[in-house]
Image (cartoon, rainbow, N blue to C red; front, side, top):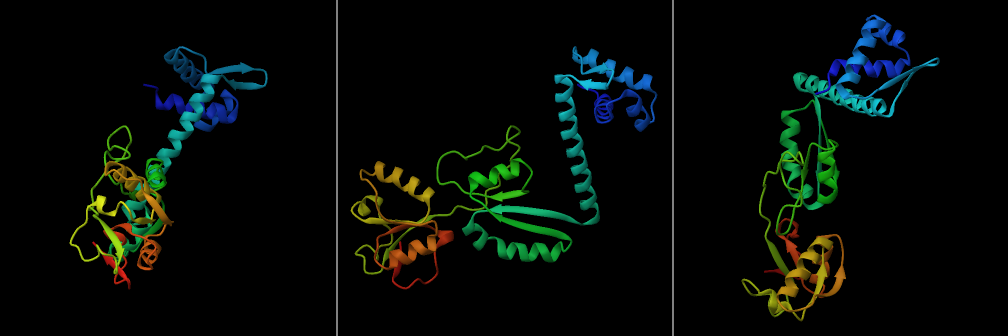
Length: 261
């Protein structure tokens, strides 16, 4: 393992371009700085600096080490800041969420959280899972509310990804139909019963999921309308444009002309 103190010495040498100036900044002797750099080079088996008449020049391995050391130093400063914030009750919480979860789940939770933690600044950003999960991995968001339709998780939890999943709920899918539709009064419908129906799509991911299940049921999806908003999809369905597949979290309450099965 690379010695952290030697890394710091190399950072100072790179910053000041001189053993003497780095030594003065660190309250060390030039000899001590030289010894630390020599020990680092022995440990790595390669040179990290070259002395010249113009001062000290980093080798390619030296530049790589300094870049790494700068990243580590920044992370340590960030950790120190977060610890200080926690100790004082201050802080910042960034939540990345998809639209419907933000609308249905966050308001009540945030009301209670803000009341209990008035010194914590809350920031909410609207993102789809493919964008929100990388934000968490990069440390730009503290948590993400995400979803997936079927199969394995889009990013597995564990040490390799640095993510931990906490299931919040299962969100069943319903079929929305015009109230005049012959199937509107049923308690449930089979997907095959809708093979001849035009579909209004409320989300591109829903379309991908639906096309796969339609193919498994033996028919090809016929799309009559496409939008990124489930509420608009339900309004179009109520107007008679087709039928729609809607997650329970996105069902619009008491939409005139709309039946849900």
